[in-house]
Length: 222
Image (tube, rainbow, N blue to C red):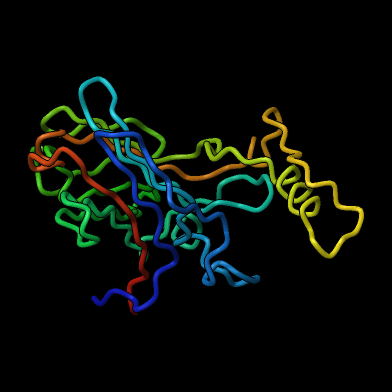
């Protein structure tokens, strides 16, 4: 099988050991997500990495929606077996990944959907898998999960639009004001599908004090 030659998204780089830095986020903005036939199953909205209980936690959020809606399951929905997500770990931040964690969904004969992770640092096995919507455990005790979650991306789009208009040099009535409201979340209550996994810090960083992460998605060629 060959990986498709187009990516739905390539999202953020972040610092692990120092303060986290998000360079970009995509919510149905990538060219492949546009229109009625947009590839939402391959759309990456955000990528995260953080520390929790002595472990590193990585996450890829996928299938963001421009309006609140329920998740669509099945091979043609958000859990698409023909899409591969790769979580890239760059241990020296030279924009060349040193560790690739590959993630795929699958459907068994009983119609049950599962998630498979390959090359998860410290997992105790090359491949680990389990059902979606359930917290699963690797042979070494690391947890991983995929399922429906509220979109954690916080943004006041109404305030952004008003602020942008307020600084419009072509508008003589512009006031030049910041009009954001920190209690107004345009993404609140909107669904995404989250892929979340713990990693052994030593295995993931390979001894580095600073690493970067990003993620890509690709569709398998038929």
